[in-house]
Image (cartoon, rainbow, N blue to C red; front, side):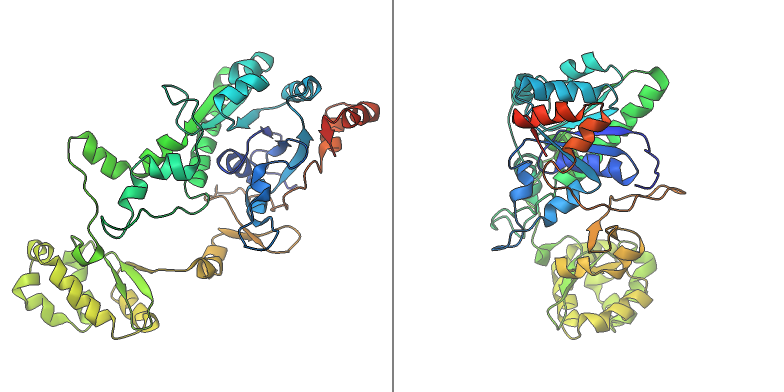
Length: 399
C-alpha cells in the first residue's frame, strides 16, 4: 500500500454494518493500516446483503471494507479476547458500533481497552448516544438518523404522502464522516497530551445536525409544519421543473436582482417582468403558485438537453435530477476523484468525500474474504505458527 498521511497508524475496525466500518475506510484511504475484526463463520452481517435481487454479490461490502485486512476471531472466547488485547498494544485507533451492553459482555468497552492502552483513541458510534434512558437501544440510520429526527417526515411531496424510504447508508456515511472527524480530533489531542480517549458520535445526533435548519426553528419556539408541495413552494425560482422529455431539473435562482433579467430572456419570457404579479420580489413570493405554473408550461416545451445551455449561458444555478445509473457514469465525479478505480483495474469505487492538498489517497484495494489475513495479522503480532494452528483448532480463529 502506498504511503499516505496516516502511514504507520494502526486501526482496528471492530464494528459491523456501515457507519463504524466506513469511518475506518476513510482512515485507510489516507494510508492507515486497518484490521477488520469479524466473527468466524459468516463474518460481518453487511457481507450477506445483496443489492441485486437474485444475485449473490458483495458490491456494498467492497465499498466499506476496501483496503482492510480481515481477522476472523471469536471475541466471546477468552483466547480470542486475548488476541485482541495483544494487538491493542500497538493499536492507535479502535472503532466499534456494538451496542453498549454487548461491549460490556465482550469486555471491549472503552474502560476495558483504555486500561490496556491509555494512548488508544476509542472511536464509538451508537444509535441514540451514550447517555440517557435510550443509550442501550439499537438502531439503524433509517430509524435513528432519518425517522427520529424529522428528516423522514419533512422530505416528502405533501403532508399526505407516505414518509419516504431511505437509501442504504444515507445516514450512515455522513455519520461515519463525523466519527472520522472526532477520531482525527482526538488524535490531534493525543499529539499534544499523550493521552487517548473516547471519540464518539451517534446516528441521532448526526440526523439532528442534518435537519438542523428546521430543528433550530423549533428550538426558537416556531411551529414547524410540513413542507408544501412543489406547486405551492414559496419561491417559483427555487423549484424543480419537468421538461418535454420527462426529465426534471432543480433551479436555484436566489440572487434575483442580478439573475432574473437574464433568466427571463433565456426562456423567452421577458414579458413576465412587466406583470404586476411578478414585478417585485414580494409580489413574486405572494404569487409563487401562479409563477410556478407558468414556468412549468414554458419548461415543458423543450427537452432538458435544449434547456441546459440556455440556463448555463444565463448564469442560472440548476442541476438535472440524475438517476443512480447516471450518477455512477458522471464524468465530473471521476475527474474530481469521487469515483476511483480499484488497484487491479477491475471496476470503480466511491472514494471518501474530501482531499488534502499535496497528499494522495492510496489506491483502493478490494475488500477481503472472511479471515483472509488472520494468520498474517497474528504472525505480524508475534504469534508462532504453532500458536496460530492451536487457535484455529480451538475454533477461535478462522483463516
